[in-house]
Length: 224
Ligand code: AP5
Image (cartoon, rainbow, N blue to C red; front, side, top):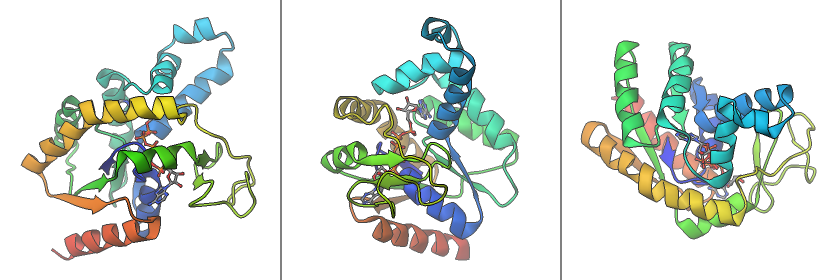
């Protein structure tokens, strides 16, 4: 699943994996879990910076990408453990180098990409979505203060945890994340157009309409 920050990748991946019984592998979620794990163990920020994942936390907070080496190694570990039924990648690959490394990694593991789902969204809509996003720190559920509200304001519907705003969802950082996306990740879409079937999805629409487009394409693909 490709798309700009805030295109709705996480929201749609959660729906797709539930419908088709797949595994959701989000590079951003895995990074945040690793950072949280490290932060719990090391209180001093200077010491944190000497460690690998907290160093990545600074890059994420500024809207830059984490180095390819770190990401590819991290995702390789996750992909090796994926079930037979299949999986959806969210947030990975994000550079042409990562896409190339992923192809080799999948080939080595006897796996392949069946479909590339490209969520297309306008930058202005991205800014609105990201600054209004609220996430559950426990189960990862994603809400929006206007578009996808929890039943009780500020509380996760699934587990009652207090919702948080991600540290990289400020307007300033969102602008930089969009720049990073256009510079480094958009070329990945062109990479896949040369090698795979890419399904372009209009992700400016509301979440249910986006899901319907995805399901229509995936159902057609399953019948082939
Ligand atoms: P990551 O966590 O992957 O963030 P991202 O790609 O920037 O995407 P987001 O999770 O912010 O947005 P989303 O598209 O999932 O949207 P969502 O569904 O939440 O990466 C974070 C950082 O980690 C990166 O900046 C980088 O530093 C690092 N990183 C990760 N992977 C990396 C890699 N491969 N290489 C290098 N570095 C990497 O929706 C957003 C909001 O909109 C929500 O509030 C939601 O409720 C709402 N919403 C969703 N869809 C709709 C809709 N259709 N209509 C209205 N509202 C909607």
